[in-house]
Length: 247
Image 1 (cartoon, one colour):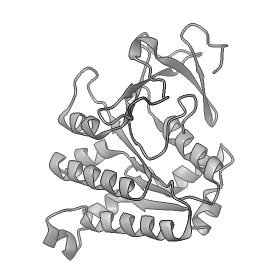
Image 2 (image 1 turned 30 degrees about the horizontal axis):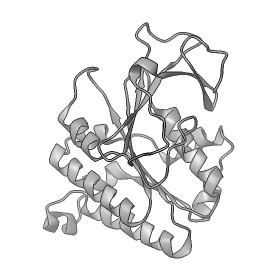
Image 3 (image 1 turned 90 degrees about the vertical axis):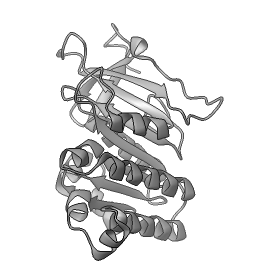
């Protein structure tokens, strides 16, 4: 998953980005990779906060992925997490958890997928920062993430969560909690010198506290980060100073 890093399945991948270097391309590439590798044998669930289904369809269409076909085959589920969480049900209120109904829906989708499809589902939460900005507490968000991670482990599914870094160099409480749970951390940053025509940004990969021991995954610190250039519908990766040496 996510070439050029070739990450394993059944992990919790935390993706962080900054305003000048949004991680849309990374989320898209993870989804495209999963769809093309698994075809209609496994499930994808996108929990979206800021983007509509139409926007996701438009983005993935550039990679020749027809989401309408995936939805018809019940291998792709889209949940508008904001509208669902803001309209709390009686069950949510009883449990004192604004995401209880959402979690139950995701659990039902994964259980149904396990009956009808192969293991190896992909669950994407894009993005958790916006939920915090519109007023959900850090404790409720952390509870949701812990529950999602446990649910994904139970169902042999991969979990991806995007978190926006607002102030570079400052680790906010939500990031620290998420990092304590993750298997790997994909760290997407702008260039220190600013964006250029040839380079859109840089990307590092760090092991999280729950990384697999003796894993074959090759991590990259910021000092050795890959650079990338965005094109229409994809990203090209290369070593620093070698923009023509595509990986």
